[in-house]
Length: 194
Ligand SMILES: CC(C)(COP(=O)(O)OP(=O)(O)OC[C@H]1O[C@@H](n2cnc3c(N)ncnc32)[C@H](O)[C@@H]1OP(=O)(O)O)[C@@H](O)C(=O)NCCC(=O)NCCS
Image 1 (cartoon, helix red, strand yellow):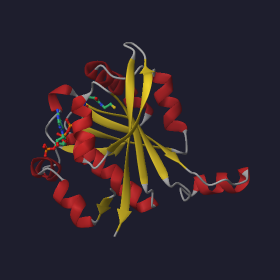
Image 2 (cartoon, rainbow, N blue to C red):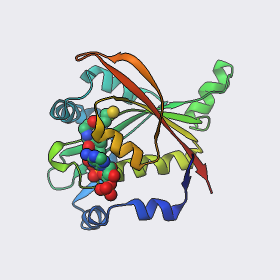
Image 3 (cartoon, protein in one colour):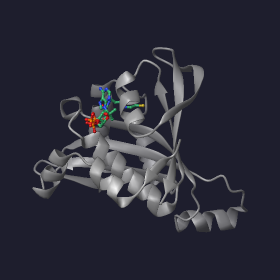
């Protein structure tokens, strides 16, 4: 089943307390820069997710097929949550026209969430939702119609978050994760534009 996207849908999904925090200018959503990578590694460590290194994140930031956004506190500029996404095209093109499309951000039709995490003390307060909604708005603007992700089979918290946002398990990958070894669920959601 597809997720129907409309501007009303985006607004009604936002947590009211978070809108208040944003209106009071206590938190902001901003693009991620290399200077935030240390704080992002800290969030990953606190959440016990992913084995990405600082270089992995910096390399990801340099890619033209990458989307990332963070939530920061305006007072101390602390990063409290983030999302990294890889944009995907299924179209086969020669290198020159593909590069041109990438530069104009025109030619993506799918996206894969590489990582999303919120500092533990800020979890359950709607921060993940507002970051995800910002990403969905980006998808709408680019007419990206499918979002994919992988999640550990035991990570029921993230699965709850993804289910709430319309994702369904598409298939599982045996022993996909290391340290500890675990199966992955591949989940996807189709966005239907109205
Ligand atoms: C998963 C995660 C990003 C969600 O962010 P969050 O800010 O805690 O989530 P929100 O407060 O915005 O919750 C939005 C919705 O997700 C669902 N949700 C959130 N936490 C949940 C949980 N523990 N169990 C089930 N559903 C949950 C709820 O439906 C919630 O909506 P509601 O409050 O109206 O019921 C966050 O918990 C996190 O960083 N987890 C650790 C890192 C991680 O596992 N990342 C995913 C790797 S694949």
